Image (cartoon, rainbow, N blue to C red; front, side):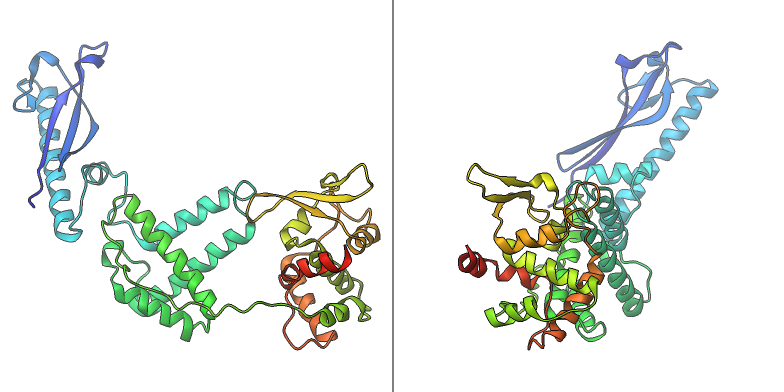
Length: 358
């Protein structure tokens, strides 16, 4: 189907300035879509030829207006022709942006990911966590490395992406970066998000990776047996900081709270009812949903043990995530557990211990 592309220039008589001149406007129409813009030029309304879209004046000012409109016409036609040849999909808005230099054409993959990463960074503490921003930074580094090693480029234009790109990237992450299936899948999610952003902006009209299905990680529940958790709770640990991480792990077992939730737990979030029972009322960091958790005897003891150590109203003075992960692995080895111990494992066992100790 042939595109209906046209453009014209007109004056806005409703915005006549004090000097008697009217601003010259531009309008691009393409397949029913319309985009208007200011040319930055002014002309006398009595000298404007609406049919010709130019001034009939012969003074220097009016001649300059016509000369610049001619250059603007040439620019519109050039950008339109280039987009038809290179992209195969264009809109009136994209042509206008290219003419005015609002958007750099063609928009590139890494540039889009960089913009998304900056947006995440600005929203930390509002609707995103620091860990999310770190994931975006890591995704950018891996994608940038792949493009440079595979294609010898600093970036890739969206209109250059083909189905083979995502297949090659999948293989690269598995072989060169030695990533597990779950990690590869996460990187593919970032890549697909950038494609969706580009489609929403009208940069590309189709998903170049349509039909791609990543390998699904084998789901393995990381349940700990009651004997394993008893080992974690009773094995002697001399180093105070490691012992603290052990207590936080146990606290997670009995409350089901994540690392982020425990780290941000505040004194006012621990409530008591008329019967003397205590509860934790907290908004989960990951899901942003309200959660009410009963406090059993063991987590109560842990709270009493570290009473007064938290800062700025927090219950605990939590260590950074990297240290917690390292110490949790050490605890697993000290307890001689058969599987690697992770802090996330604590939450997987919460229901069993609620029932056993309530």
